Image 1 (spheres, rainbow, N blue to C red):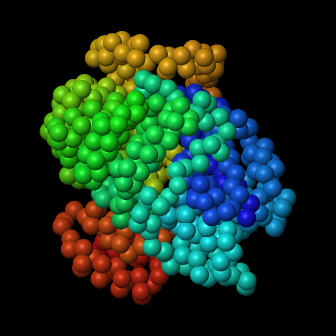
Image 2: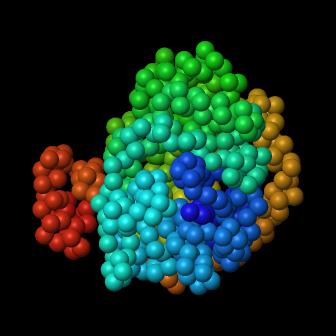
Length: 550
């Protein structure tokens, strides 16, 4: 079958305004690249279109025409929440031009919302829930729809059918390497976040699926609770493949938690130390769950920087949203990282329920006290499958704008009751970012590494006209941009208030993680099963309603 897989753009900066974010960071869409190589392994003809790619046009119709020009029999969209309406609009355009083309959509948004998506968007023929390889291959092979696990579809009478989940891929080494070669402009026109690498060219890898932890803000509906990894040898071979075929010399590992399986980390480091590739790489660790020995091995194996999710420095916020992490553990981990000669990057979230101007200032002070080499602070976006979703959607402790296009961690869609306005939040966010990058410690570290960052500087210089245009645009159009953000209207076809469709296991995880008292998973599971059996679609099946009964 001829299949075209698409990564929609969505809104990745200020809604309705030019997207300058790709000047600083343009990453390959690993998900559709992995699906492409998998489908081609079984004889199907696959093409890719990245709507955020270096040669992609702007606008729905222009991108849809490129998709149609590939002459597909089936189109597959991999859409996050913020990119979903772009996928829906392109799908509608394609259906109007060629009703015979089958259209599937997958990724986290449809995995969390499920069948109601088909009720509202007739242009989609199939929803792929969870891991996509098996269902997409069965569709391409023409298997009977009723037999395809992870598939939601309409039968001949138009009734929506929900197939059971299929077993996860247990051996990720069965997967071929992602189809990097199908991505126009890779690797030279794609680039990692500026000043996060010393060598070029850069690429991204994912060597595991899932995460063994339950944080309040994280949606795990795609891979659910099972954590699986590639072997150390496979990961080494993958890195070598990127170097040898594409000239890649820096890799960002985008695993949710790269170091969860310690022995795999040590095995990979041993391979890279014994047979060096000359490749630098970055990865994520969990605060308080590492060791001096592991960090020393990562350094010897070519790691430049490790990142860790901290989220907040307010003890109450940390206890609620990032269980098991303490401020002292964060300080100790940063000291360990620096002691091993590695760079430390902290990841933070601004604006979760319970946030106030005081908690933000506490976090800002803490960040500056850590002497981090880099930090990233995202604007909190509730996700449908996350434990915290129900509370946000009910406007408990704050007020949420459920505009899917804005839910990209770049807009404050949720306003905690501790703030007067989103403008106040933006001002405090900008204050902290400026404070960090203007700090004496950061500027000193940056100056020392100026030559090491020459490829990032070269990228900035090469795109200097666009960079200057971006700076001028935002400095001279502040009022218009703020007005556009305030007046940005909902997409006319986007529904509001859809209930997440979660498995029993994830419902239990969400209830237990958000409970203020210790709960028995076994007892909660009994309650979840009982209530779901009684009323599959009633309001009592939401996590907050379920929690009230246990």
